[in-house]
Length: 68
Image 1: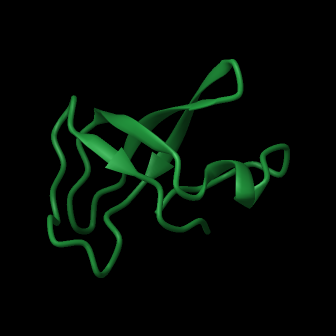
Image 2: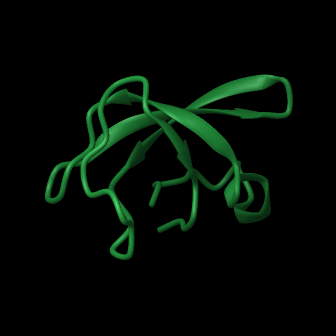
Image 3: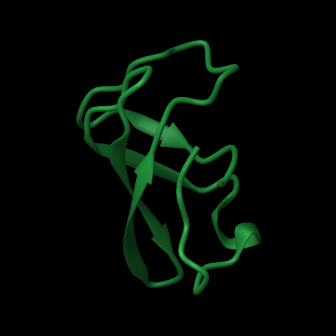
């Protein structure tokens, strides 16, 4: 899941593919980078509670599945 500012719309982000830029693990938020339009956005992220993988390393490919 990713935290999002009010300038971005939920529809712009859900389903977006990106990559981990700071490690993510249970209980520890990290950062992801995604492309929105022609801009690269960096968001704080945590593993989704139903994710098959609970920890993500720098460079891992991700899909945004929810927003807080």
